[in-house]
Length: 126
Image (cartoon, rainbow, N blue to C red; front, top):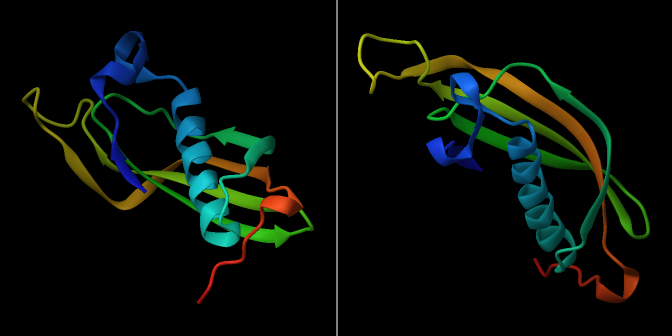
């Protein structure tokens, strides 16, 4: 998923966005992965680890990725990563200045578990 962080998502002074914003994106991504894998939204039940590595500001563009790395009877372990691909804070002479980051900056990493009850699992037809 790639999203632009809205000014409405700013929570702290200096145009800083709360870390919970990225966790919400991880939750949406976990839901998509569960639907693709099991045909049901499931429920993100826990984070094993979360690492906030760099700040996120209003106006930044984030790319969020996730991969199911372990599958149990009802649980799926997911590795998440959020990268900043465009930054807009303090990058140029104008309020509208922005910078494409090559390579992108990893801002958050996490490991989480989603659960899909057995009676709701429908394997995707290929």
